[in-house]
Amino acid sequence: MPDGSSPAAEPRPRGPEAADARTRILDAAERIVQARGVPALTLEAAAREAGVSKGGLLYHFASKEALLAGLLNRLADHVEAEFLAVLEAEPPHPARATRAVLAWIFDHPEAACENHQRAAAVFLAAFHHDPALLDPIRAVFRRIRDRLRQDALPPGHALAVMAAGDGLFMARVFGMYAPEAEEMAALRAALSRLAEMPA
Image 1 (cartoon, rainbow, N blue to C red):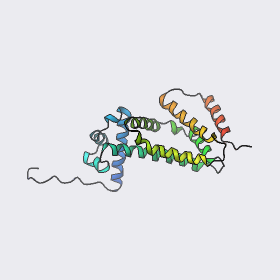
Image 2 (cartoon, one colour):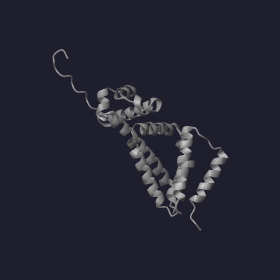
Image 3 (tube, rainbow, N blue to C red):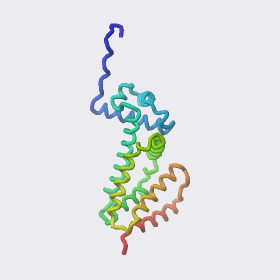
C-alpha cells in the first residue's frame, strides 16, 4: 500500500454466510472435477468458479488436498444419510437392512439422478489422484455391510443384494447396459427372494 502499511486482513464470514460459502466452494470443486478431472482443480479455479476470493476459500480449505477431502467427506455423508433415510422408512423385519437396500435400489429414482452421476465422476477422479481420498466412502459402505450382517439371512444373501445394486449403479454410470422395465422387475423379484426368511 502507498503508506507502507499492511493490507487489512479479509474479514472472515460467520454463521450462515460461512456455511453458504463453504457449500458454494464444494459445489464448484465438484463441477470442475466432473468436467475436467482432479488436475484441473486448483484453489484459484475453485475460488473463481465459486465466486469467492482466494482468501475466502483458504479460510475453509487450506490446500487442494483439504478441498478434495472436504468434497469426498460431503459425498460420504450424503450417501450415508440417503441409506439411513431408506432404512428408517423400512418396517421392522429380521432382514430389515437387506430390504432397505432393495428399496434403495428400486424405489428411489433419485439414485439415477445427476447428483449421483456427479458423485461417481468425483469418486473415479479422486481414486485416480489418491485412492486414500475414498476412505470416507469406504467407511460408509463398511457400516452398511455391518448392518447387513445383522440380518437373519443365510450367508451371502444380503451381500448378493448389495453387490447387485452396486453393479446396476456402475452399469448406469458407464453406460454399459440399461435393463428394460421387465428385466428390472424380474431382477427385483429374484433379489427379493434372497431377502426372504428361510422356511
